[in-house]
Length: 112
Length: 115
Image (cartoon, rainbow over the protein chains, first blue to last red):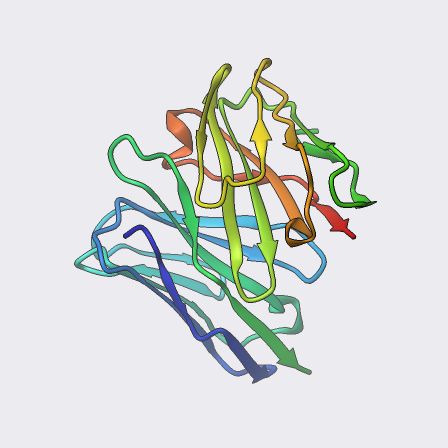
């Protein structure tokens, strides 16, 4: 259906290591959004991907949208303690379905 | 400052006592929605509203009501709260087109405990 599967559920890294979280759908996505939620905070929008094969960068963050528009990834290069938080992907329904469905998120912890 | 506000931020109540959580945005957004966040389950959409007087169910609407009488406000109503509605609730808003393709702005959250 409209679900998005996100893996891994948790990731613990040493500061300076890279980190990747993946978002997968069984159906084609019209777009995918990524959000970050710091501990104790609210989700904050990071980016939206729309085009097949799209790659966008924000400093150390690289976002990709698969060629088939069924998966997406967020990669962080050289993690810092400020990257700690939960990263969510989210998809909209199609057609007249305007629901927004979030993945369960990946909790990233960084050991300084 | 552009923002989404929610009140109250924290609420402890008892089973069956009706409550309302308010949500207001000052960005003239058409799309508003409510989510609940539970450990291991992520964010799940309860209800959303495309515009004034237009609301629709999200993925977990049971036990909740909403109304959209004004563009800026989107209250969440629990007519008879139960302990399984203990959760962290977020209100969010976004620009038009049903929110599709536009970023969601989230409120600070309301921590609800039902005993």
